[in-house]
Image: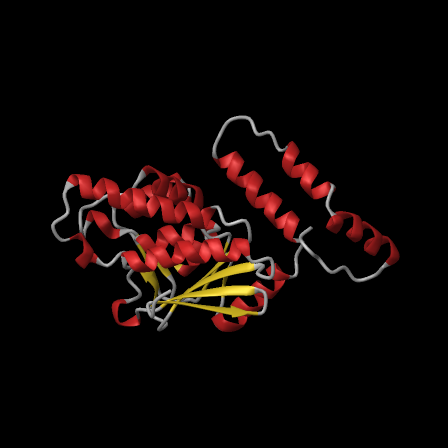
Amino acid sequence: MTEHLVTEVRGAALHVTFNRPEARNAMTFEMYQGLAEACTRVDEDPSLRVLVLRGAGGRAFVAGTDIAQFRGFTGEDGVEYEKKIDAVLGALAAVKKPVVAVIDGHCVGGGLGIASCADIRVGSSKASFSVPIAKTLGNTLSANTLRRLVRAFGEPRAASMLLMARRVDAQEALLSGFLTEVAEDLDEAAERVVAEVASGAPLTQWSIKENLRRLNAGGEVDDSDVVSAVYGSEDFAGAVEAFLTKEPMEWTGR
């Protein structure tokens, strides 16, 4: 990790902070790589239950990719860049544990792509969402990133955001379902949401994420391996007994 991407373990959560407040947390390629490494870390560490993403400074979650990195780009460079971003966002979307995005201020371009890969998003009343490339750089999005935005906002809203460079405020994001909650005390809301997620059944959470991933891939879904893994787990057997005997359950993820 670098000074621009800070990681910290708090309880059962790995917190990743995009830490370039002077640049509204615009992403460098090094920061994208650090995010991919955080995804691997949270999946490989059984003590970690949640991945939490947040921007530093209170002005932005992430204000896109650092534009200075685009100088001298060719068409081939653009293809390679979008492939790299697809790989990082694909890794984030594939994290087996819940991902929570805490959004204060602007969530723009690549930042919105990152937030769209989260499972749960909470924001402040200052949160806003846009991809203004039609009026700024004149670049484009990969089909994979576009598909995530369409799933997150619905096609009509995503199209208007992109074609008109339209900004969506916190209340519209809440009504659209993109945000789970708009909170005045964002720190308190984030702590509460993370605690609720971390207290849930790990294999249930994994199974929901995995089957959603398969459904989003299209076609018929064979979920027999997922269902078998959950119903055949020590957690399920223990939870049944705990429920019937009215004893507390401690999840192990096994």
